[in-house]
Length: 271
Image (cartoon, rainbow, N blue to C red; front, side):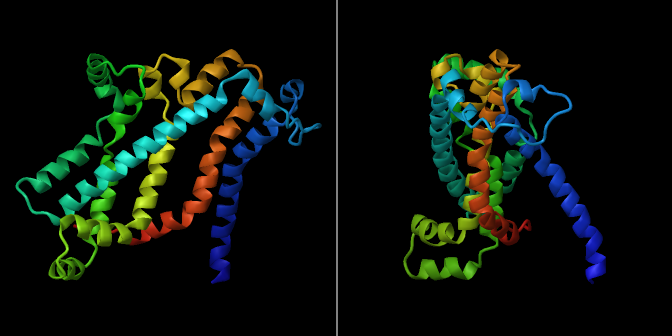
């Protein structure tokens, strides 16, 4: 058995090294001097570790402001997404109403429409509402997440009907059953949705680039894009900014990977 697994382990190790190398190169470049970063052949270990690059980046760009903007946008979007997803998924999974399956299929079909198709109509709507260059334009359009509804709906359908029958016999209403039974049993799925939503908002670039003009409300990725245009040859500062941008997501995934695995194991995809 061990001999059969050895090639698999070797392939996984090689793939793991290949995925780790870009992060290692980013971190080591962030610790180099500007001239050393341009040296050829390149050095894999900096001659002098310049940790001051991580301090200098805050002097050159309003990185703290970008971080705060992104955290606020991600938090507001996450709260709205969880609220709408839990209610919609519970309705699609346990309520019987006319056109339920058709509406759900229509929701799934909307996931196949790429962003450029509805970019102009969405921009015109926000422009008429006066939301361009405001936090509302960055938050409100993303308060509904169809994938989150789908994932929660599939999970709720796997919960035993006996739980809902017992709750009804005990006098629990619809919302009490939802918040005291469904939500606690759906924690791994909810955590997974939260992580994906945070990552999506943290890495969001194209939409914020279109609907924002002021530097004061720009999220992290858009701010870094403007910074890279001004400091395109200062690779250590660019890599330092990239390292700081990706570090919160790495920490988040490290602490939440158990919940993601549980969600993948528990969430059924059957009707």
